[in-house]
Amino acid sequence: MRKCWWRGKFEGAGLRLTSPRLAIIDILSKTTKHPSAEDIYLTLRQKYNNDNIGLTTVYRTLEILVNMGIVYKFDFGDGRTRYELSEGPDGFRHHHHLVCTECGRIIDYTDFIDEEKELLDRTEKGLAEKYHFQIHKHLIQFYGLCENCQLNKP
Amino acid sequence: MRKCWWRGKFEGAGLRLTSPRLAIIDILSKTTKHPSAEDIYLTLRQKYNNDNIGLTTVYRTLEILVNMGIVYKFDFGDGRTRYELSEGPDGFRHHHHLVCTECGRIIDYTDFIDEEKELLDRTEKGLAEKYHFQIHKHLIQFYGLCENCQLNKP
DNA sequence: AATTTTATTGATAATGGTTTTCATTTCTAG
DNA sequence: CTAGAAATGAAAACCATTATCAATAAAATT
Ligand SMILES: [Mn+2]
Ligand SMILES: [Mn+2]
Ligand SMILES: [Zn+2]
Ligand SMILES: [Zn+2]
Image (cartoon, rainbow over all chains, first blue to last red; front, top):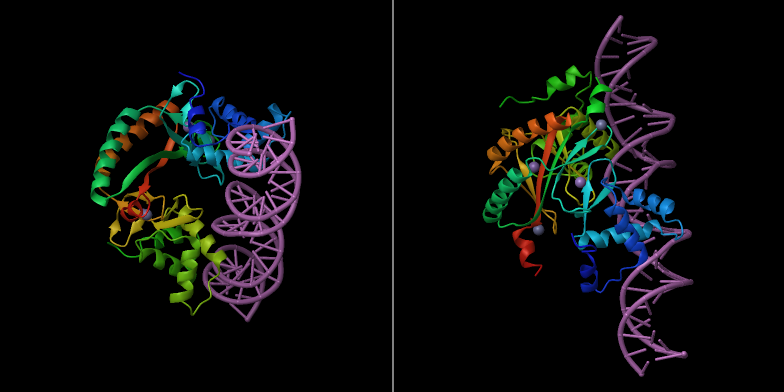
């Protein structure tokens, strides 16, 4: 688990690894949640209140990180985009999501991920051939009710 | 292939099957695309220009249809919500999507759908048990470049 | 070191898809 | 017919995201 695996990507792109950018990566690397741009902005104000990082910068930085493949971007259906480091604090962890449509709770799961991966690879290959599509990524999500929301919503 | 399979759902909910609603369902049932609310609104103005159906009504109707399970709602990443009848013109057709991130083209595919279904069922069952989640639906999408966009973007 | 160039930043304004509001119209029940 | 409920659409409000732009900071060049 080498640290700061993203540094190289920044240098290669002629981009500067500034303190706002480091702070945003830091926040993402220390959470298991899926914060929105505003979530990150608010965390910055609380914990790093020495500097005054603008919401615009948060949005801009996230877009850069997404384009470099350092961060993944998700829409879980609650009207705001949510973000997640592509490589977790403990190294790589490919996973998919379970989304509660009532309270918005997100669960990362890795169960069945190998079987899924195998099927997805095969499907991607088949689809690429049949539709001449060049597939770059896939998205799998399950929607439903979490334990709490099942009880509170009969 | 019984026609107007949705009538029952409307009656059961105490909702009226008005002409704007019928027109919107009609448009959805005659396309293989995935129109946005505005797409539907514009089609209404062109083809059914006798009446003057407001964009608000389109949004409202779509939400009702989604809540009744008659229509599916998708986010393909282009900033607008897109809709599709849950049961196609030729009866049921469960499928997933291939999305071109360059031009927004959407391909419905049913290849591998049986294998996917089998794995999804198994995964849903496993996840439901492990996380006590009550799963209602799944989402699978592949993102990449369509044939055209591969050529025009080297 | 001084100067030029380039990248970054954040306050503000603008954008644009979607929702709310609300007065009016249409349908339904009695 | 009449009272109540549901539906409609124009306009205004909402709100996450993006564009503008002048100011700042860092790198490159002289
Ligand atoms: Mn996750
Ligand atoms: Mn489709
Ligand atoms: Zn929940
Ligand atoms: Zn394309």
